[in-house]
Image 1 (tube, rainbow over the protein chains, first blue to last red):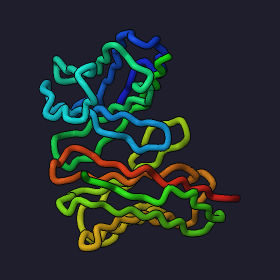
Image 2 (image 1 turned 60 degrees about the vertical axis):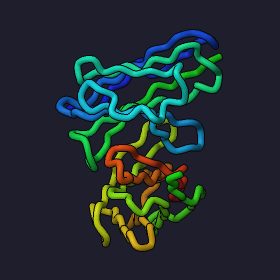
Image 3 (image 1 turned 90 degrees about the horizontal axis):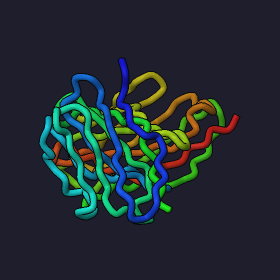
Image 4 (image 1 turned 120 degrees about the horizontal axis):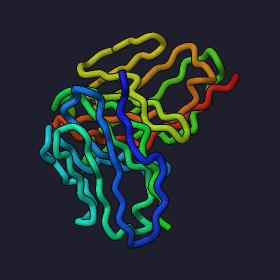
Length: 114
Length: 111
C-alpha cells in the first residue's frame, strides 16, 4: 500500500515568511509524528498526534511552530516568521496506534530559509 | 536528558563480512528499540524492531538487546555494497510514542 507522503519535497523561502508543510499518513494509521533532522544529526521529535489532538507538542522549538490535524488524517506543520535556523529536513511518521508501534517515515520536506 | 549514543563511524567493512553496529541509551525505562537505515538524501527506513532481551533475526539482520547493560546492537551478515548507509538507533522511552535517535553510524561496504 501507499506509504507516508509529504509535500512539498523541497521548499525555499525567505527569512520572515510563513510556510506550511503537509503530511498524509499511511491509511488507517491513527498516530502521526513530526520530527526535524539537521545535517549529521538524528531526527528530533517535534509533536505527536493521536487522532485529531496534539497529545504532546513538547518538541516544538518555540511558538512560531504550530501543527494541526483537523480530521485525524492529514496534518499540516506551520512555521511563522521563518528564520535561517529553521532550515532542516522535516520528517513525518505514522504508526498504527498509540504505543510502542513501529513508526514509518515519509520522504521528508527539505526546508531552506534564505 | 534522555540520550542515545552511537559511534559516528565511518565503519568500513569488506563485502561479505559482518558489520556490527552498537548503540547505548540512558533511559532505563525504555521499552522499544528500533534500527533505521538512511541512505544519503533519503528518509529513515525501518529495518528492525526489538522489544525484549536477546536476539531477533530477520534475514541478514540480527538485532540484539541487553536492557541490563542498556545496549542494543545490529549485526549485518554477508554485507553488501547496497548496505552502505547511515544506521540510526532509535529508542522509545516510557512515554511510548516519542522516539529518541542517536546521531547514526555511517557504514561503508567495500566491494
